Image (tube, rainbow, N blue to C red; front, side, top):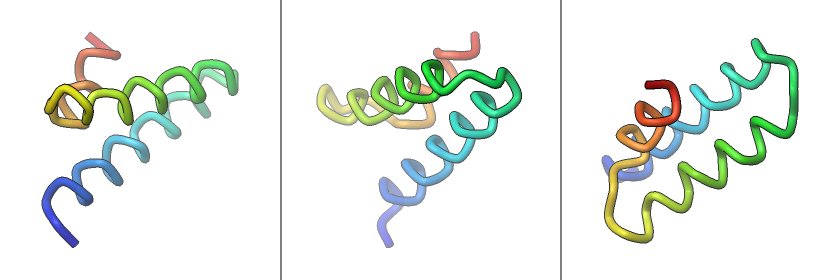
Length: 54
């Protein structure tokens, strides 16, 4: 597993945990899309996750 794959797994885990705390699947869907979309311009998935909760 590459570092990028590991970062993606951690970022998605954090997003899913946060959405479970909030209790709304709409947040999970949007946040997952934001994390996955961050890979396209070359951002770190963890950086994208940090921006979601800043």
